Length: 338
Length: 284
Image (cartoon, rainbow over all chains, first blue to last red; front, side, top):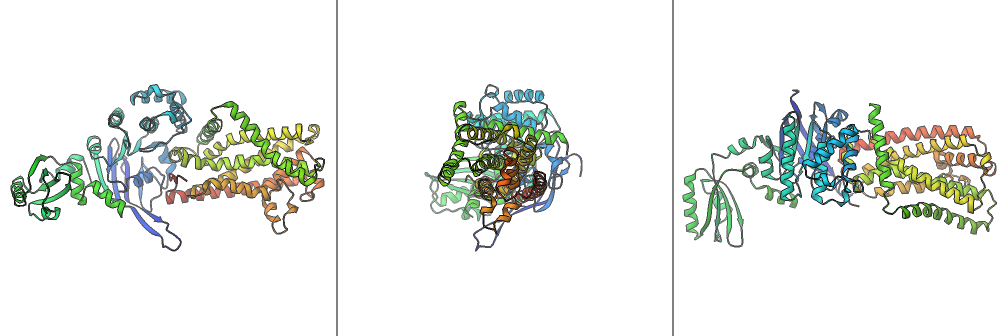
């Protein structure tokens, strides 16, 4: 393995054995399958996928919390399963959307305690705590009991806990989940500032917010149903679709027009259709811009009025639709109903 | 493993455990609770004994029961305290996964969490003993107490109980439901089979071997003997053994149970990693 790699996985897989009732046979759930990733030192690497895609399972394996059922993974040069003691001093993790921490301790006490578990000298730990809390705008809350913090502030405290030990590799699992817009912005800025301060620091971020992945990550792996479908820079991923012309169209009621009818048109490479109270919103991917005229003609035949039309640049959501065949929201819905 | 990792795991866990245990908003309430709870527990036994014995507190059975019950507080406090840290951190504070990914020694962390329970347990034992001596005619002649035997036995027993707590912590890691009751159920079972409030001879013959295999049986016997030496002469269970022999048995069983506990914890820890149970919250 090259020394420049912070994370490397090879054919990594994880199967959960689900317990049913006594009469039922055990079912198996494939959470990860054949995952091959190489993350360079200094990279901000994103894992993008819907809920249940396998992102958290992958983070749990990489942070030594869970054993893989196949393949291997190395973090900071050490095998996560065979040498967890070598991995742990060099990593840290923050999970979003949860209110972990000892509510009866103050913010400073919570953070100081974790710094001591990592062997950070007490004086240095206190200096870091003060500086990091100032960066996330929580310095005035240092002596507040963490049970008295709002969910957002508690999450910020946990984010500081992750950064406090200055890990070589930091895992952020949905760090902005449940935060308001302002707090999200603060956290994203904080992440970028932290990485900028030391080029050797590596950060693996999982998110199901497309914009977050696009804005923050050097490279993104799109993951769904336990498999990595694509891995590249956000720009390169979007360029895959650059050959297509993308249109957002708002129309009056559809008068019998279906998504399948649109997909059946030879010029249409992808189509999603969402019905609204006043009509429908269409997202079309066309082989060429000129093909739009034929689509408009189809609308005219069905007596459908075009109320708004916009050409747009491809996003990571389009990349996901291109790879999976449906949007991330639709994939989450189908996953939860399966 | 570096000794500094072991020490910081234990030290910080003890610090955290103490903050949790002493986290009473009202110190007066904390003091009342610390006094009332152990005395109430002892009072129930005293009343029961009084009814059965017709108020004969001069019988040697009374200090046998009273001292056994008083020192049994350590079983619930230390053993359950260590295993309860898993439930507390995983379910309540949701921090167990962060402890697991930190460069610490998890068994020592859990043992450290038991230190505070040992301290609060010691306070409860002291209060119970003091109440017995001052108000209930429990006769302890301090000039005749074998202090060396007492402290050696006490320390050995507390270490043994902490290691048993580690065994329960391992089992707790792998259990999804009712994990909160594992410690209490085990402490309850040991209460019957350790000669805490009645000699093992009272049990049916086929159940007695369980008691003979429990280190807590020898631990309680030695604590009683160190404080009131005449107990062995009155109750035949272990009368044929000298203090040194019982101490040897206690030491041997403690080493055996300690080794089994460490093995069970490691095994359960590996199972928990395989099944993804370390960060599971059940909200039970």
